[in-house]
Image 1 (cartoon, rainbow, N blue to C red):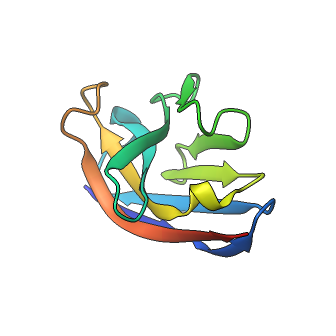
Image 2 (image 1 turned 90 degrees about the vertical axis):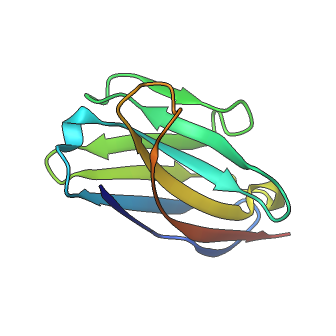
Image 3 (image 1 turned 180 degrees about the vertical axis):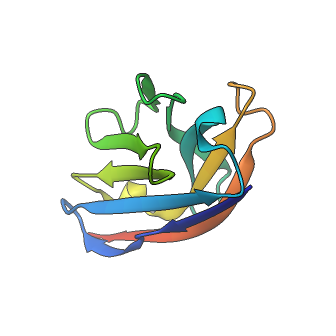
Amino acid sequence: VQLQASGGGLVQAGGSLRLSCAASGVTFTSFQMGWFRQAPGKERRFVADISRTGTNTFYADSVKGRFTISRDNVKRMVYLQMNSLTPDDTALYYCAADTQGNWAKPYWGQGTLVTVSS
């Protein structure tokens, strides 16, 4: 499984960014997809995930109502639209793929850095 994340950058508080993740080497619809993030000095944490068909989504409380995860199974892409960003959203964001449905042993992409200035 190869996951290539992109779209990170520097944005002012209140701004928006859209992260993208391209998957290859897999049957994309076999995987639940998700985004995690790791802030400086902290553990990697769950942000959002989306079911194989895209029907169901789930968000961490800290991003609920501000972030939207989506996927395009034809293009083998997953996205994270991030609005109303705050400095607390500053982190390295990772795309992940999981077949188990519980994120016990996910496949990871490389991170893309999001920096939110105050």
